[in-house]
Length: 216
Ligand code: G3P
Image (tube, protein in one colour):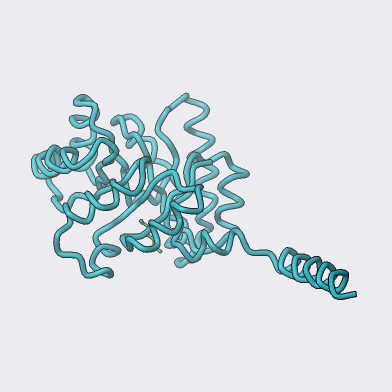
């Protein structure tokens, strides 16, 4: 299971990377806008200098030619850039072309198993089903991950399943149980994965007992 951080905040990326467990970064236009960065290429250069693994950079074009053109420019930034392409007809056409040029793609905004199959057939390097946004509309987002991982394994698709729109640690645990390849999470969720109240209480008691012994 690879762990990615879903943010455009450089401090969060540095801190998660220092924890020694970060395998990559996903960004999207909303996350970049939240941080107020206008120079997207400069931001990506900075992220790629911190993290060695895959860094997803989303295109803004919605037509095949525009997506391909943007992708060819973005991959010049660093070797670990992966092009995030929306799961629309024009996006799939672009993924086919980009994969023939060995440009890695992360097909995003996936909400159904049929979309995931088409992305894999087009040659996507990563598929990003959004689980939290499905939960938001009363559909169990993790059911989608279960279906995609099963279908991909039946046909031997090599496209990696990246669980996106993760809102809490149970999404991560279920993603692990289902054999998803990657889970991208906000910094807050990565921190929640570490925390356990019994660990904190246990540690506090160990130190208290140790100090008692020293002062006896
Ligand atoms: O990066 C895409 C995805 O993770 C966004 O999550 O919380 O905006 O649905 P969210």
